[in-house]
Image (tube, rainbow, N blue to C red; front, top):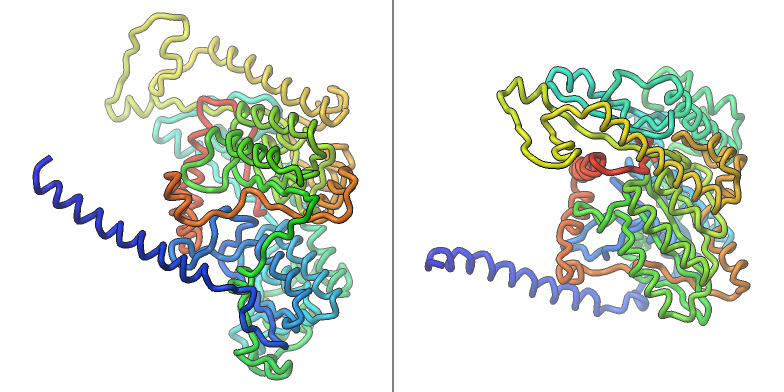
Amino acid sequence: MNSNKKFLIGCGFFPLLAILFFYIGYTMVSGGVSLSTAKYREGTWLAISPSGTILDFSELQRDGFFNNRQTSVDEICRSVRLAARDGRIAGIIIRPRFAEISYAGLNEIAAALTEFKQSGKQVIAYLDMAGQKDYLLCMQADKVYMEASASAGLLLEGVNANILFYKEMLDKLGVRFDVVQSGDVKGGGEPYTRTSLQPTTRDNIDSVLKARYDLMISDIARIRGQELAKIKAVFEERPDLFITPSQALEYGLVDELINRDAMLSNYGITKDLLVSVDNYQRMTVPSLKTENVAILNLNGTINPGGSVFSEHSISASEIQAMIDEINTDSSIKAVVLRINSPGGSALESEHIHYKLTQLRSQVPVVVSMAGVTASGGYYISTPAHKIIADPYTITGSIGVLMIIPEAEGLGRKIGLRSQNVGYGKYSGVMDFLGKRSPEVLRSLQRSADSVYIEFKSRVASDRNISMTEVETLAQGQVWSAQAALDKGLVDGIGGLKDAVAIAAELANISDYGIMILPAQKPFWHIFRNQRLLPLISSFLTAQSPEAVDIAEAYTRQRFSTNEWLYALPFEIDQ
């Protein structure tokens, strides 16, 4: 290596080293302060002000330096429950700003706020420019206030699923896809082979959207004490996109129009009597006892080895690490799997299924389904003794899919050709620039059918349902939580707290603590384990969620080729 190269490497190495030493010092100083003795005086209000993407759970600790993500749903809920017992906290004020929170996450926060109100403390909410999920959070308050200015507004959109179709574009490029699937409604390949959804797929999507829409309208009407027809008219008959403050008051969506400073003054809340949930949540730690229920957070796409782009992925190796921790802790008497996954690799789902089947032979296992627990997500749920779905859960999608690209036409357009020289009946069969023969496609279909039968047999065995009945529930169909309950795919509807209570009952314990896995880790742990891309992903999530969406879309596409998938074939706002 010449001296110039050594010099350049040195220029890069020493600044990096300086940053690391600075970070270590930063975390030691910030971490050395005992937040449990923070000087919040009596009469303090906890301020919850979510904006941007709010994760259900994050494995990465927030440090305000490298990882400046928003406080997660899990952290908000723990803060609210701690505040209910904290004599210094007089109430909670909610002021969201176009926060992206899953419907299941909103339900978890709502449950925590209900417990808080039961302590006799107040919850108030304030809206200025707000979206639908902001409102669904704020409506849990005792009083909902809104800025009176005409520049304020509320956007209630309803629910929808948007599917992008690529076929016409691909035809122009000379690219096509062979889609092999088992399950007539497993529509993941339709965007590549059609210009619109086939009627059965559309009807299935419509059914889960209708169930979610009806549930949301019913929840708003019930909580706000309004007629169901009146709330439905707000969504379907109002004249303008944004609901003005005066309209929000007229529709019964808010209780009073007032300037924020005036509202705070009415409650005697000064700036020094406000503590942000970002700061307060650092006081919260899981309450462990001699007997505990472990909550395993399983979020994201099911991929072998996890995702290089995000901490939010599920793999057998990561689950095994958590199981090993459970096996070494005799205080853990039951396990709750909090699953939020559209599925992914079929083989990895089977590996996880095996590990969870082994786990259920040791301790009671209960699944708590979050926003989407479908396809592979449902596959890994079935070993549980009980499955509890959130009211807004989308589940099912029992089917198999493989999508294989072929670009012979593109090759001709740009003068790119390939020639295979080899031995064996199937040598070169996955050539990107060559067409697959009908014989190969028939072979792949037989394989898909075999994998599909295995999926159905797991459901039949674990859920004690006949194969004939499973077939009527399968075919790639998705189900709302209530439909899944009616058809025996789940055992109940409720939140994470309900699932924990059921797990404790199965374990015959009453005085128990909660252990959360995986444990949150600081930056240096990620650096030590060479998991830098998840860290970058967390930073991007805070700055630009769209960048992470692109990266995750690439990951999904990568695992959509040459591998059998148990994957939800479309995306619905969670």
